[in-house]
Each structure stands twice: as C-alpha cells, then as structure tokens.
Length: 194
Image (tube, rainbow, N blue to C red; front, side, top):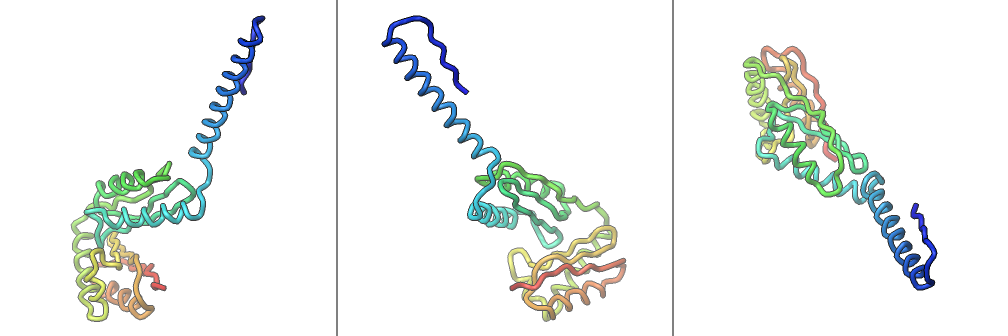
C-alpha cells in the first residue's frame, strides 16, 4: 500500500507529488502482481504439458542414461519431482540439473535412488540383459537408442520397468528375467504401449 504525505505547499507541487506517487504505486502493485504470477501460480495445462515433454526429452538425452537405469518424473504446476533408480550418482545430479534449466520449472525434488555397487548385481544385470534382449521375440527392442525395457537390480532383486508393445512381450520378458540364476525375485512393472 502506498501512502502519500504532503506538507504545505503550492498547488503545482501538490499535483506533481500526487502524479509521482500514483505512478510509483502503480509500478509497485504491477511488479508485485507480476512476481506473484511467477512465484506460485499454477501453470496452464499447456504449460504443464510443455514441461512434461521437455523433461522427458532432457532425461532421455542424458549421456549416461541406459538400460540399467530408470528415470521417472511427475509435474505438478511449476514443480517437478524426479524418482527412479540409477547406477551412477552423477546421473542423479545430472537429471536434476537438466530439469532445473527447463523454462517454467521453479522447483525440483530429486528422489532418485542411487543403487548400491555390487559385483553380484553387475553380473545379474549383464545376464538379465542377455536373457531379455537375446530372446528372438524381444531383440527388436534392443535396436533403439535407449532400449525401452529397463532392468533394475538391487541386492539380487530384479525389477523390469518400461514399455512394450504387447502383453505377450511383457510375459516373455518376465519369463526370461526369471530364468537368470542367482536372482531372488523378479517384479514385472512393464506397461503396454497404447
């Protein structure tokens, strides 16, 4: 709120002071409302959709993102929550950094889990990759830059994440994952592409 205080003086000084004060008040109220619009107002559906597209693109383009990592995100207005699992700590920070740079993103919550290093898990990862992508019905998926079936291994437990074309492909991937020796459990979270 702008307050105008004027001492005794001429009408001209009074008019000039009122004009200056009104201009200053208008500028202050305009800048406050502009800051409010930027700081916390929800985005339009188109704005959220744009952030979702750009976040997906930026995450997929990360140089060390591969088949043994799973990156996911949720957009809520101007905030983005990252989650999933990665084998390298640098990939966690890289993901946060690229999403922070997206226009319209004000806050990033990074809940990505860095998987523990383990020679046994590394052995299982390679065996799972060979079992799944070496299967004739599934080897077409290995031709993509980032194959859509992600193999997450944590302490001998395997989780399949990603997207496949059919229920049959999902089932074959689950069977192949279960065929690897030394695996304690397999969770098949593959989704069917629509």
